[in-house]
Amino acid sequence: MESLKNKFSNKNLSILAWKLAIGSTLSWELAKLLGSDHPYLAPLSVILTIQSTVDKTVSLSIKRIIGTMIGILVTVLIARHLTINGWSLGILILLGCYISIWLKLDKKVLHQVSLTILFVFFFEHQTKHYAIDRLRDTLIGILIAGILHLVWFRIILRKK
Image (cartoon, rainbow, N blue to C red; front, side):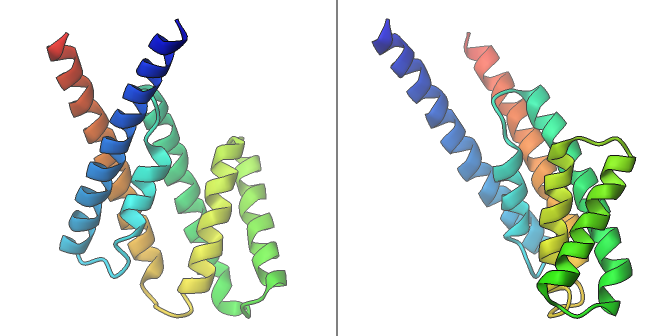
């Protein structure tokens, strides 16, 4: 029984490895094709959103894009008036998280808001189009993850 469980687990891990590799490759290349200077953001979304089922992937993808949008809005509207330091970062994260709480969003969205604020706050001071790349590349990664999951699901169903 244990051997069968390990074999099933290893097969699932192997499938996940292929999805992560293929999704990362496709999303990076598509982000570059669409003009991103930060194409690593698209595979980041693939890696963070691919889950064991299509439903879980879609749910996490929705939370990721909502959190990314809130984080970008908070940071772009306020960060230009702040210096880059830990206090400013903390204030932005607190504000973004409380907006999410006010909107009755869950803790996964709060994590996405916080991550987005951290990166946009830091990188937007260095390159003025990081926020746009972040949003576009997040969308690319999420779409690739969803499409890959659906295609993979259909291939597996056909084989059975």
